[in-house]
Amino acid sequence: MAGLAQKVLSLDRRWLFLLVLLGVAIPIVFPIGLPVTTTSSTRAAFEYVEALKPGDAVVLSFDYGPSSGPENDPMAEGFLRQCFTRKIRVIVCALYPLGGLTLANNSVAKVTAEYPGLRYGEDYVNLGYKDGAPAVMRRLDKDFAGPFPADVRGTPIAKIPLMRDVHSIRDVKVVYTVATGLIGEYWITQMHAQSGTPVIIGPTAVSAAKYYAYLNAGQLVGMVGGMKGAAEYEKLLAGKHPELQRFYRSTRGFTATKGMDGQTVIHIVIIFFILIGNIAYLRQRAAQRKAA
Image 1 (cartoon, rainbow, N blue to C red):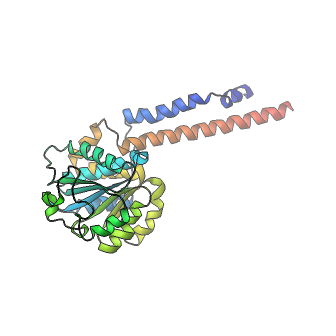
Image 2: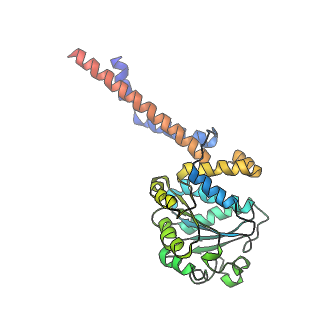
Image 3: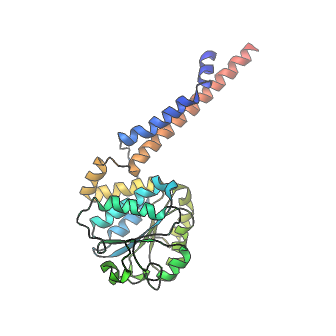
């Protein structure tokens, strides 16, 4: 038994790294489809958007960088799919300096390709990146043209059909900020406090806890917290819209549901090796005491 314990304790750590790699990769390539329970904050966000009318305008702000993409990308893409399925017009912007615009371009291109009937400038528009988030938000209370005089294609905002009846942030039904860092808070404390426009936030899991105070105070209408929240949102989308149920079941792309499968497997692997390592250590100590 002591010999077995010694072998476990001296196991080459590269085998552990290989198991972690397999634990992440296999569920993504071959999804398990583990059950996901939805929280009230995610359900509130989903139902708020679901209650909007076709033709309503919303803002989707990409306020995160590449480092949190695996958590935040599925949030933004799920929101876009819900809006496009329900014919809600989407105004996309980015206020995060480290890759926000690139991520916005990637997600918008990916999702709009799934809806070939969409018309750029009428069903959605990408206004691009603007620096100085708090100042931008304060100016949006007056008009969009101040901080965003043209879209990413260089078209003046006055010539974009979607923007003809959306003059300021007060004309949109909700702002959905997919955020890391402080920019998500700015939408609540700067924009919402000034204009009253409702806010939904999609923070990383590590940041989600601080936003419950805003939820409880009524300053947020919903929150999609971390990859778990994004997986909940995907479940709600699949349950409400059959076409999205088929999409999430068949897509080969990365989704939050697949990510949660991988995360669950990794947690099991880690717990298993913690238990095995502690048992082996205690066995080794007992053998050393007997030998002494």
